[in-house]
Length: 160
Image 1: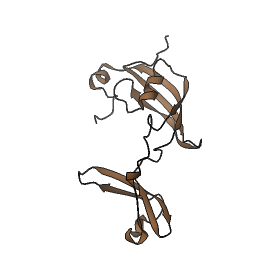
Image 2: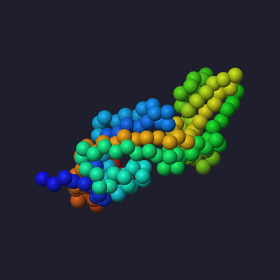
Image 3: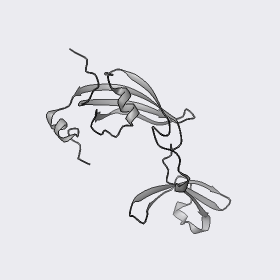
Image 4: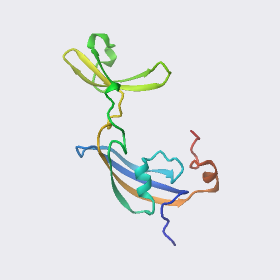
């Protein structure tokens, strides 16, 4: 039996742990997630490139700068207003508000602070501006089916 290595057209199942720049675990995925290498997987480019050539059982440590990962923190996506102007149901840290801009694009704002009668919301990703570290374990590598290769999607997933 040959060991399958990750390359374009292979279906890869992996688990991972994500740490923020303070070293705290912010996400831990134990149930393997799968993607097809080289088919717009949604993985960060650096991670997909570094997985190339690895096989089941391999573990990688990958550090992503803000530019490689969640992006720089954009101050224009942070707003502060008087607490009295904010609905009562949003007056706690962690509250989420969905809003649309003039173009109809939807954004999610999260209440990040309440202080001195002011409430601050932020639409940046919570890890924006941070260097993060992934610990990735490859669980399985297999050939994509002909249908998966044709559609660019894993079997049982909807086209997006």
